[in-house]
Length: 175
Image (cartoon, rainbow, N blue to C red):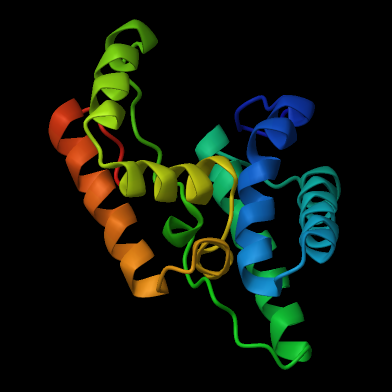
């Protein structure tokens, strides 16, 4: 579907690509995977309905992604507040992916450098990154699993990301 004067977006591909990130955003705010999934579905439906009925125009896929994530976050914050829960995640960056699109170097260039950078991390740093970004666990969940203070986990993840960016160089996306 093409919004007037906007980019063509393959919505099936779009939601397949950005749904996992939206679920992480929502889960960090509402706590339960089931409710997070429901909120992401509601955000997707809202976005799609706006595109159909109001002729919303997106300048780029990143523009559509930001709208989708912002809608997801707003729905999750509203839900958390209604439930009397203080939201734990306050920005998309906390969810593990920058909101601003970053250019990606060719995979054949980045792959070996990333593998080397990951290998250079200490085992605790590697494990914290794995659980946070590959498993999508919150810091609280990782702390409960590993009996490690949340502040220590934050420090490990930040140190690991700094080390990776330092080894990969300017091509590394911001944390």
